Image 1 (spheres, rainbow, N blue to C red):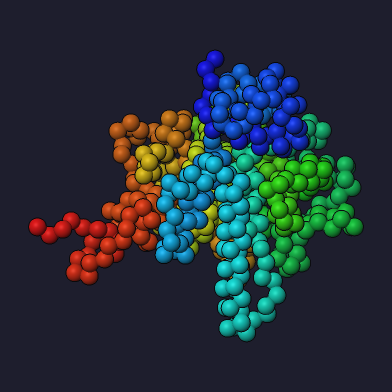
Image 2 (cartoon, rainbow, N blue to C red):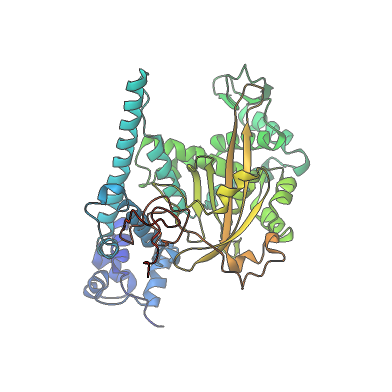
Length: 479
């Protein structure tokens, strides 16, 4: 077998240190000398394919972790960091950022964490100043934003797939003898039989705004009357996940990426939601249905009595070996452009610190709420993808309750898109696609009339006598 590409030595070194073993011990397991392993770890000898396979067998590695995906995400993060306006007077060339990621990845991650802290401090300071100006209470300036980002990183690193929770969801179907046509009753009976928890439905006012309230002492789970059938099933399954899988949730949340108590608590909620989705949409039946219905989101929602967003999110979790679904990316944002949920199995790196390019169809979906919009898009590097987008409305019920509108974007590569019903009648081979970017500052397309900020890749040239498509768009010189 040919040797794999170089620059994998530091990953071998990181793996060895994570496992807490010496070079000599690992070399013995691999059947090579310690001196040769030392050369591999310093990228002075290539890591051969047989040695890589042996490492995977010894430590149950996903070989994709050696394919550079994490480094690519780290590079995109740092490019976005150094794209902050605070570096305008001291720009950092992208080649130096690439070199930092390649030669000192831990230092690069440290810079990313430092910028996270800076962003949080800056946001807190701004919030604090606004509260002082308004004479508001100053308590409660917290770190929720950074905690949510840590959980997003945690889900992304695990490819949004947790086989233990899938197994527990399958076990629940067997143990509770659940039936599709009466899932609510089956879940409620299971809670009472196995956990002595009684389920009731109550009015909005009595629940004081909560959709689900569990009283451990009273052994009572109360759901809001405004929840529809599918949402009631989801909340029941979520509560069962907290009770049945508590040790698993704790163990999974005890991850080095989750560095705060808030992040670990938020992780437990996210993982319990994962379990609930796996209960509503069991892996094998759901995968079979996606293929039969050709990923028709509305039909899948009707079949499993799940919401549009729940179906989209579940589609991103179909990563079981030899039973994988289409590798989707998903993003959820509000009408102001704030990203509140993101995941990518398709290689697209969503912005961490700024807004998403306004040319993505997920923004345009707000113009026609409730209708699906399709789009073929092409990034500056030539990568093309197909996406669908639609708004979802969240409403607690009642005349005075505000209605919140979000947009969901779901996409994949063009080859995989052939499996989707939404590409019927579309020639995926002869369409250039809408030229999009990720963020304005990282996009080098200077001829974009949607540009809101100058590109870091091109110097800003101002001519007060000439106006282009936008303030930042250059024009040809007058002949």
